[in-house]
Amino acid sequence: MQKEFQRSLMALAVASTLGGASTLASAAGFALIEQSASGMGNAFAGAAATAEDASTVFFNPAGMALLPDREVAVAAHYVVPSFNFSDTGSTGALLQTKGGNGGDAGTAAVVPNAYFSMAITPQIWMGLGINTPFGLKTEYDPSWVGRFQTIKSEIKTVNINPSVAYKVSESLSLGAGLNYQKIDGELTSAVNYSAAAFSAGGAGLLGAIGGPNVEGVTTVKGNDTGWGYNVGALIKFNESTRMGLAYRSAISYELDGTVTFSNRPALLGAAIPDGPVTLKIKMPDSASASVVSRLNDKWEVLGDITWTGWSSFEKLEVIRSTGATLLSVNEQWRDTYRLSVGANYRMNEQWTLRGGVAYDQSPVRDEHRTARIPDNDRQWIAVGAKYLLNASSWVDAGYAHLFIKDATINDIEAAAGKGNLVGSYSGSVDIFSIQYTISF
Image 1 (cartoon, rainbow, N blue to C red):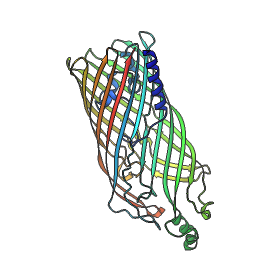
Image 2: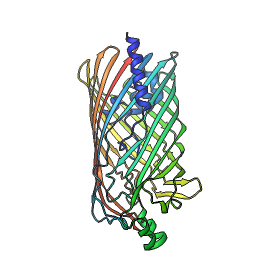
Image 3: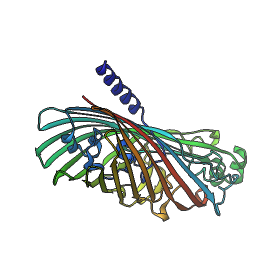
Image 4: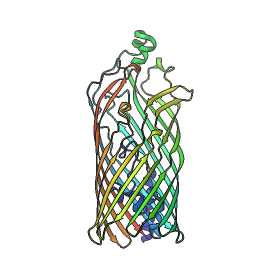
């Protein structure tokens, strides 16, 4: 009965994870750090050193060497972002009505993940992780003032991560993994047919397509797969303190897809055709250093610093198969750091309480902020708890609130028929996490 239950849990986790997930990214940029509920309660402080359960496959595969013979961890995270634009001087697109503020661009979503680890010999462990390391979704009211810049931006990834760990000695373990990652992307925005007609043929062509306020929606969709790797080391200084070092490689994609135009006037069909497109994007590499130290039988403290190579995202560019540029946005992101500290309090044999704070630097520079990804620095406050069901299974729960710094935007695109988007963004994120772990 127990084996059937374990198999059912894994099947459910794999099926839900392969469905993908997207939300307004809760870590900076469009990274999703929600890879375990046990880590959520500490704001992921010490994530590369804790090796508390099978989710270490993602954070540091070397940590599997501290786990029992077999372990399964299944988690789900309900992410509730809120992101609102305030207009402080925008101008509508040429020959179009201005529009409103766009409503709340955040979209709630469930982010699942599942992990398995198993000891092969006293020195060798193997594991598997299935998760969503990157995801983004911003979606505005289709009639908002910035609709010609963006309506919807969505990125979904699924990552399959087989891993191995080798216990070199009692004080050192090493780990490595492969990452097979699938990405799907969708970008939509309004298209200003009135401005296009006026630019191409003056008042005569403008009148022929129906005059002002003729617009539609352009949709770009694409997908690709890529390979990467991750490596890690776990160093045990003594019975109380250990350090984890971990690195995840960049993954490069060239998404193949299509562009389509809705409500397109027949007279503009030849000038603005549907067709195949490509979009190149590189997911960043990252490196983490974590420390965990047990002060006494009750208290444990944790810390982490993570660097992410977001400077790989220089430009968002969509190219037609003819070689013509359909969309080009200068992003010029910068590399970032994430700092976190936390603590665990073992209240009794069954209950452990968690807490943590973090500072997550945004890769977006103020002068290059766009409505598609209007990101800014964020601060985390997190709490959580672990409840031991029996000697071999337990439940973790965590909650985090993210305070996002208000962000200004000054996107001047009147010359392109898109209007000027001038204002500021306010936002926050709430994350609710739960995880079931069983050793057998």
